[in-house]
Length: 486
Ligand SMILES: Cc1ncc(COP(=O)(O)O)c(C=O)c1O
Image (cartoon, rainbow, N blue to C red; front, side, top):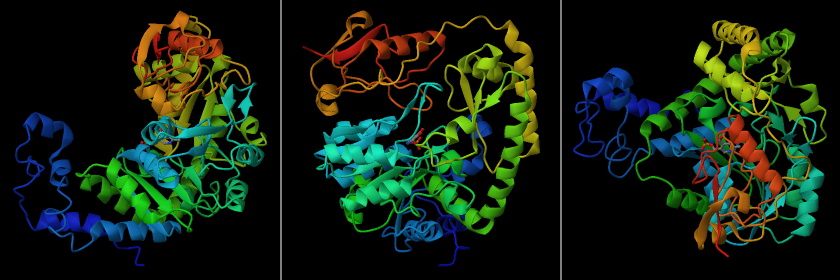
């Protein structure tokens, strides 16, 4: 295929040149109706590019197949058999993948470090999760990806599950041995879904960790906006092999999706694919070299430590995506929450995953010497300021096994059944009916259908007191919890 083509992007440029006008949504009519105060912030160009997909970008019958062609080009670029674009984030792609492989019933093997969008699929599909327990690192207090042995043991216990799903890279950049896990699944004739939300760059450079499609995964989900260059919510999912029906997959995405997908997002993904094919290797090369330097420079700063050896030496970690720089700030006597808040307030710098002792920097092909300089200046100022920070209340991090909550009810039944909100002090032993997900990275501590234990409550309450953000419980302060009515 001619990878110089950009069907959606080019059609959008043509649409603008031809001065088309639609008596259709979007009613802003390419910006004509927009309040100038809105235009001042959002710019005219974003509205000019926001057009209807059919009877807008394409004709009424979608005769030109721009989107179809852009998806084919993406599949060709990354070596998948089929690719689908989503404008509802990987959150939609993950749900579509799960519903397609399970047919909306039965059991699914899932790494317990999965993102909360997996839980949405369990609730929507009425599915029984069979958890693959990821290896919990008692020293670092974080979860490593599941090992092939852990996946195999879970299959032995639950051979009737329809598929397995793992997250790799994790939000910490650690990567599972996907090839070995694929082999274990395929020996049983079952598909493997890899949630590679953090892996957009992987197909385009051989010095990055193994890309799920080359490792033989059946389905893989990628957020273009996270590590690629695209608008928020842009996601793609890729398919290969004959274990997943492509038509069913498309139908599952269709029933979850919007009928008004953003052309702006499609066009950006289309252009990013061409950029990656043409220049991706060189750009990622430069970013990897820059990142190696940044990692070394941060490591030299007093009180800061870049995690690398501790992550790669764990048996579960096949590889590390170094673009995730996980910095331990505990040597400064502060928490990751305090460090992040201070850097935002004083240096206008924001970060990704933040926890009781770490902040995470994700590097992108957009970064260069000047952005790295800002980062290093900010970190130096943080080091100077840290001794003046008030003491943070301690976060009571559970030990190994303490967060392995028992699933005693289908997530859907717990979520939709009769519920009550009770004081947190009375919740131990009850079945939870809502999620509690420290964000980022978005891995639920408990989810509907699990029996609450004391360690999880202590962890979440002490975390909230220290600055952890829980966007999903009805009561974010966690004074009350929604549980299944007894
Ligand atoms: C592992 C993982 N999967 C899926 C998602 C959902 O991605 P999106 O934000 O594109 O909906 C995220 C988002 O943080 C994630 O970390």
